[in-house]
Image 1 (cartoon, helix red, strand yellow):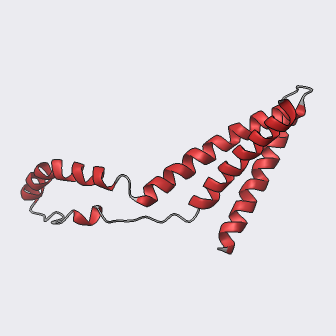
Image 2: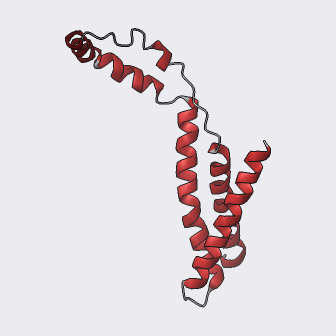
Image 3: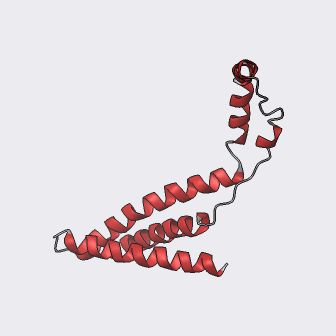
Length: 127
């Protein structure tokens, strides 16, 4: 758990540093507007990658993988027969397989935190 918090802190700190540098180098005189824009743009890849990793961890694509294996099973049998090899006999383990990626939650939380920060700053200063 400590590693999760340290990775989250490192990701959020480096992201805010990159956002600050980008907002400063944008050349516009409105630093806060650039900061809000760039923080949201930096949050998007974190949200997409973290969300995709979260979906894979939950096994949302296991049924699809199982179906493709079942459809292409005949071609695998023919190639295994030609090469005199035995292929995997049971593909049911694909349905119940789970994955675990350690950086999933830090990446996802970094994206959520940056998106919330940019939304709050935009409502506080520009509305």
